[in-house]
Image 1 (tube, rainbow over the protein chains, first blue to last red):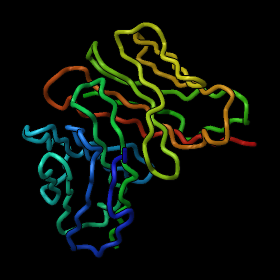
Image 2: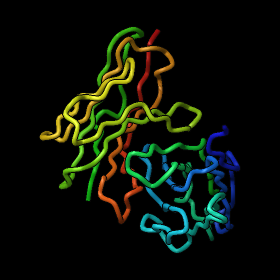
Image 3: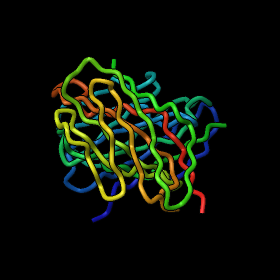
Image 4: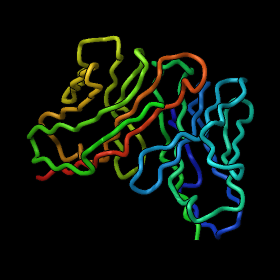
Amino acid sequence: GAGVSQSPSNKVTEKGKDVELRCDPISGHTALYWYRQSLGQGLEFLIYFQGNSAPDKSGLPSDRFSAERTGGSVSTLTIQRTQQEDSAVYLCASSLRARVDSPLHFGNGTRLTVT
Amino acid sequence: AQTVTQSQPEMSVQEAETVTLSCTYDTSESDYYLFWYKQPPSRQMILVIRQEAYKQQNATENRFSVNFQKAAKSFSLKISDSQLGDAAMYFCAYRSANYGGSQGNLIFGKGTKLSVKP
């Protein structure tokens, strides 16, 4: 079947505007993760959804960042009032279940550029 | 808090030769998983190999193998018979085996860029 799908692939926005990034996980995967990859850095955990449980938002860098997952499937990461430091690649991943031995499958990411 | 360190920002290897990428980590936990991910220019993270901390035997996947030294908190990746398609960023990652809390959280190193020379 299809892998994790993210859209858009690239997004350029002006400072101060809001953006929405979309992630469509692999069908049947109950766990969904968002990571941010800044230039020259590793991946920074943002947020994690598991089924109907409350999401783990411990990685969100500020209250300008929020995410939701509708119907246990598609997720949207929203960044309000974007800043230049928000420029990065945003990667989404899903796994069959939130077990530590369940591998993460990543999408190709959205490259966000804030001008 | 757990940390993952990759001390080699860039590495280069001749095609068909062997290269080893280093990774060290810091944790107070005894039960965890370690991973190596490959990220080609397509940006998609691809799982290369994983190691359960409770297993003493080093994991192997075809041309990829690890040297897991639990006491030293070291987890290096060896790529044998390097191929041009191996050129990519390689990330070492740690995942706690403790259920509850941020159990889904993978902690990544900053990566090593591997170049393969023909």
